[in-house]
Image 1 (tube, rainbow, N blue to C red):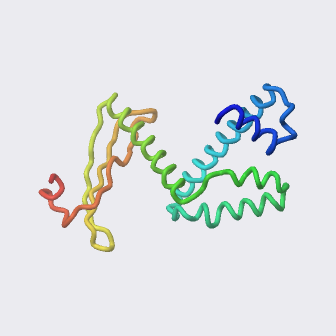
Image 2 (image 1 turned 135 degrees about the horizontal axis):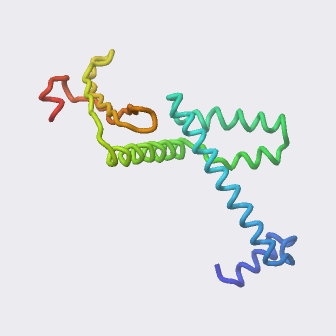
Image 3 (image 1 turned 120 degrees about the vertical axis):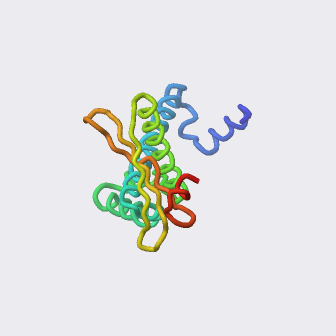
Length: 167
């Protein structure tokens, strides 16, 4: 914004702050940034729990956030509830956070596999609905004698023949 417009905004919208020095605004900015970082971390933690439980992503926005806000309102105060309401928990945000977490885990696994020898185990099966599924498990030496992680879980278009798996 143009400095004149900023000054006018400060004087009309925030008249109590117009006589404050620069250090006040720097401190306020740092507090806001810290608060945003904490809200983002909380959003990642809730998204992680939702992914672990296998729940719908909308549960955060429709159930978890309102319940937590109600609890904070009863137990603490309205200011704390307002502060807590800044945690982003919309459906799209939770989806994005889960994808971020998954890509981080995938990147970490690929980095580990690039540094060591590993063994692949493939298993094809059909689920209850008759859908053909291919699982690829990887074993590699790490902190414990061996780590075992799922590298891939993919549905196959038709059936679980060897030819279909390698196509």
